[in-house]
Image (spheres, rainbow, N blue to C red):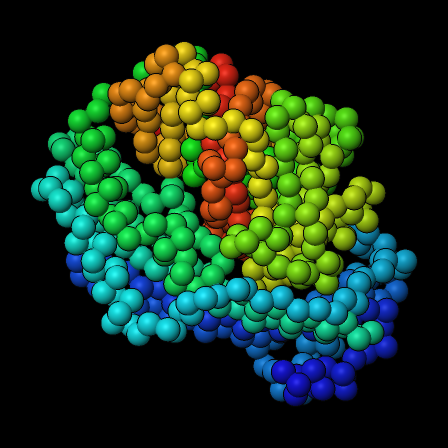
Length: 477
């Protein structure tokens, strides 16, 4: 890196701002399906992005050629784009000030991925795969470990220097049961228990033994009746809460989406700039934070990809909408405050407004208190399907697991549970928020956005939550 830094310093152009962002990513996927190991997948990727701001214009260029010649060519191209874009940008960058931050961040890892050999890691997957095969109606099962390690350096023309290394592990188990025309699934954590860290994540989430539990639950679903239809109380587990949060709060609050950048690709938002500070998004129990500091969450970091320092910010406090998910450039466009969430999926993508760690803060209700308060309702767990309109307002979600609640107690298991609602009213019907004991750190590893598309990891943490008067129905969503 010292060589790359020196090469960059030798070719910095005479412009208002110039940065080099170096990203090296190493990933490995190991999986066992039906007790047979699938071919391991290994990917190593490295390159740099050059960004130039000059005389009101902005340009960037990426390259995997890290030689002096390769970096010089990228700088020349970025300068050319910056000059071509003068007077044609939605933001005039003439008086725009980029940070020149200095600092470090590193994921805390107690059991590195490399501490076990390939055979030992496959043995872990073989063991859980064998635990899944408990009955002839289990027709498919798969166990998986996905490890990603990233090193990133960020240099600017005025001495900014940031070094960040992250490691995360995504374990997964999926079990499929079938009887005739009926097929039921159980998946570890819905979208998975992705967390920053090494192999210690497996113990943190209770990975060992989950294969048999999921298989038993899949068999229960085959025997269960279909979810009933009606308007009732809904108790959501954290692994479904995170997707509800992701789709109907996270995406609607992305400031570039609010400003119209995503409308031809992934839609707009029902949220408008005028709503911030004035709009009651949910009940007074709803507190949503952007927080890059919760231990183990997927998107922990000290600085975003534009060098902005990251800190915890309330997006919604006591139900009131306060702050959008917007980085420095979107803040300048909208004249609104934001957060350090300008993030890029790789070295060859520019930073855009992304969710990072987006959490629902825990409340005061215990699990038992939440159940006891429900006379007629349903508990749902683990997302299986989702659909939301192009303004992120009307939605429909399906879950793998449902269980009826009668007079404060969990009763009959039901299959194919679904619910629907409208973001603008659903969150106002939030009646109880679980306490710290119900709070789980989870994540989404495939959030897609932008053109060209950028798939990125997002951390989410949430407690169990109770909503009133929800439209519930059964059948395939």
